[in-house]
Image (tube, rainbow, N blue to C red):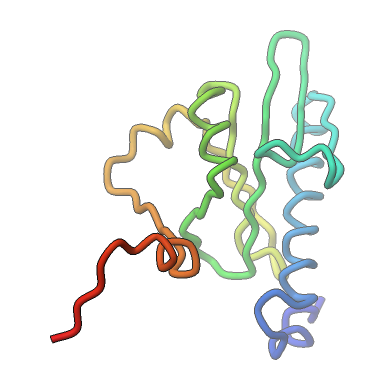
Length: 139
């Protein structure tokens, strides 16, 4: 489609990221529909650590969508997303959409499997920890 070339020069947080994320959500919704589940995207005011609620006769899913225009992606979760992941485990799913602008591919992982990964990172932003510093030393 060539959208990736037009958006190539966009800055982080610009239209490219919004379009990539939107493609990811739409791909996840299509995936749910094709698998026979009824899915609903949550509005901004409803977001509780996931983007989509999906139901079938015998299953309920809470889906967080992560999307990138790249062919690989490290998953970053907010504190709220991680809390819901821990609380809902087998009902929480991460849908990672890779190569969203050229050939979107949805990778689905159940939350309890993600919690088994041992080499994860916790990132605390500088703007958050800096003001909590008890001592400072400069040699």
